[in-house]
Image (cartoon, rainbow, N blue to C red; front, top):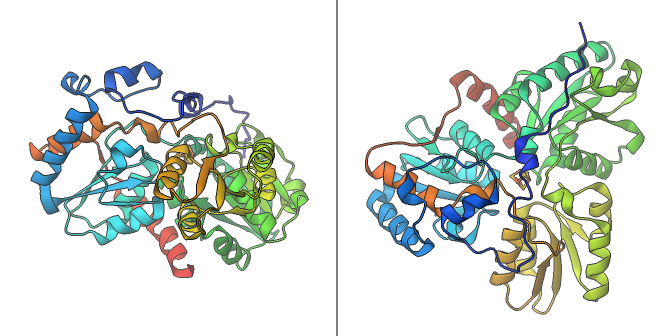
Length: 402
Ligand code: SF4
């Protein structure tokens, strides 16, 4: 095997990640024409949608939805802006929404207000007659974009060769990855995980081999492995731009966990200093963060867990309790609105939404719904049969253990 040094690249979605950050309290939806000035890539759409006010778009979406009736189901990820989530028939995290997509087999069209990998998963899990639509094709995910399938295939080949005869390795990919990477896991006795069941999938993998390759979020992988008692000195980070990920064969053989060098641009903004500031300004505050945060932040917090757990924990908490939350700000603001008897605030004082989630502007939702009413399916997300079949194997393995 010839090991190549590759030119390091940063995904454009990572470069654009802070495009919508601001210091005002509230993210207010403007016309799409005004939001275009944020300087991210936007998908082109007919010019008539650009200047429609949020109110005009609301009316138009309501009308289009009503006309489509049971043919349509709209799914909204927790990180969507309020101007979108209010139209969602169901809201949830990526996996919950994909399961919902699979159970809504009466609806011919599934409009997924989220990001690209979520729409792919919904397509994999939904019935053949259903069509999944992503309102804006530039709504990707910087974390998923950090694991390009060609780099992962190279990594897998190099690992298999370096570890041949040394106890093997099981690939686990986080839901936040492309269908092609889920398929690689399906083909190679691997599994998919979510932030809720990462620990169970690690245990499953360690029953089968001595090592785990965790893709693409190094932080969720590290946080989970630490919970299971794996030492930091038993983990290595795979740099896709270096031969053997930047390690010697011996270093790889000594490792129990190989972490892909990827991260969430939103959750890595949270710091221990922010936690300390929250504790000193609001005595008695509970700090809750997502496990995509870095290890020091997760260890400094009182609780860590998925978006579903964060939402549930705060809604079940006693009135008068205070919560500083380390996750996407659109969700934190919504939890605060839904829990007026509690103090809920984002750990980061800068209002910094996930810039790819934020690209689902109501103008795009209106555009795709109007298209459906005219018999035109725009922005269909379709995973080829072979990839979908292999990815489904890895998804089914996850479902069988959780
Ligand atoms: S919050 Fe992070 S992981 Fe989630 S879609 Fe945005 S960049 Fe991706």
